[in-house]
Amino acid sequence: MNLKDYKTQFINALLTVVEEEEANSFFYIALDELMHMRRVDLVLQEVILSAEQLAQWQGVLEQLLTEKPIQYVFCKAYFYGLEFSVNEHTLIPRPETEELVEWIIHTVKQQPLKQWRILDIGTGSGCIPVTLAKNISNAVVTSMDVSEKALEVAKRNADHNGVSVRFLHQDVLKTVSIEEYDLIVSNPPYVRHLEKIEIQKNVLGYEPHLALFVDDSNPLLFYRKITELADAFLAPGGHLFFEINQYLANETLALFENTRLKTTELRKDMRGNDRMVHAEKK
Image 1 (tube, rainbow, N blue to C red):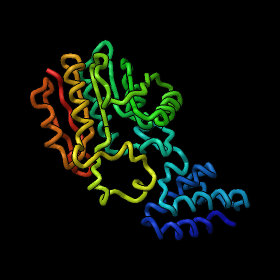
Image 2 (tube, rainbow, N blue to C red; image 1 turned 90 degrees about the vertical axis):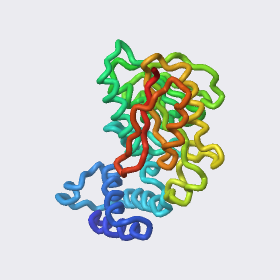
Image 3 (cartoon, one colour; image 1 turned 60 degrees about the horizontal axis):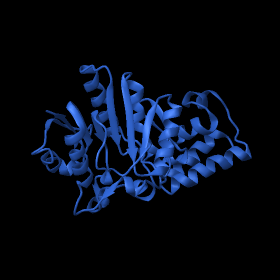
Image 4 (spheres, one colour; image 1 turned 30 degrees about the vertical axis):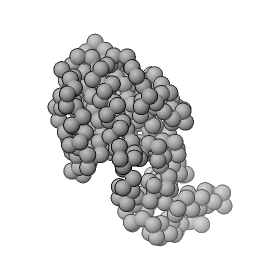
């Protein structure tokens, strides 16, 4: 079959589950992954798919029709210009988290230290610690996660991107003490079960619930614990960064009361939702 003709079939099939813009995007991602071709190559070349190639395309299409995220189809995602492996044990990196990382990098570069000791809590794919290690030359980065499977993926991503990160298999909720750090960052689980109605099917069906959801009755348990650790073990003048639940911004800020952590800023993400908090230890 001619690849240009197959493109029409592929996109028309996907229109049953996604909008046309996304269907087109999926086609061109698959074109790159399966054929190592760019959009312009398709215009300039006539390509006839072999039976094997057609089977590969059909396999991708069948997965996408189940609303499986394309990042899981190809086990690959991009974050802050870097390539990361992802699978069912790791969340797909989000643009909002890129904004958080950009804020951290800017903050660090405004306050030069001989060495930045950074702790990331909730490793996942490793997108936060790996990106910080890649972009902050004088950083020593440690990252903690309760999931051994996620840590395996994160270690591969650190190696792939040529950075050194110390990974700890550790449950932060059971952690009593940590080393002293200059900066702690966390994007912990924060979606309440009552908010599931807002979550897209491809997220609910495929991304790890352990990394997404918290109990409705205690949605800030991770933030509370990490704030306690930061209050006790951040170096004087140290920084705490959170990605937060947009509906619980005030409740999250209230956790800093009666601590040595003082909120410097609550920021909105690109969609206008309260999403990031920065506090400094006085």
